[in-house]
Image 1 (cartoon, rainbow, N blue to C red):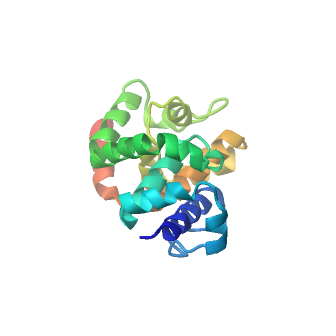
Image 2 (image 1 turned 60 degrees about the vertical axis):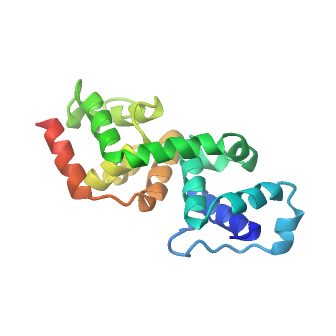
Length: 195
């Protein structure tokens, strides 16, 4: 992978996580960008360095891990990735390597004090599940798995008119295709926790 391809991959994933109309998988990671615009960038050294260190799959994971680690992907800039990128990538890999364990622990913690109907219910303000996510008690992976199981994001989109939820909702929807999981196994795990 050359530096320009690395830059194109970065832009494609940035568009995926920040624009409603762009889908990384649908467009196969392609983006309209010119070589001239790449060479005008002052930060192109970062892409040159990255292209030597990682292959395409690792670069996709690296950028995905960074876009999902921030509260609002549209505010993420390349300088922040340069500073914090590797730590975010390592944390993301750890979570994904032990995804079923992480999911089980986070759900046990949440459901130890409340039932599923309360966690997804809305009395006033944000639902408890969203509050748990915003406080860092559950990961974006668990939110995405729960959406694959229950499809709660569509319901919340109808009921909640809030900029915080809009950002979280978009992040869950955009991250979900990158999460290749056996939904049936997670349903079974959740059923064991609830019963």
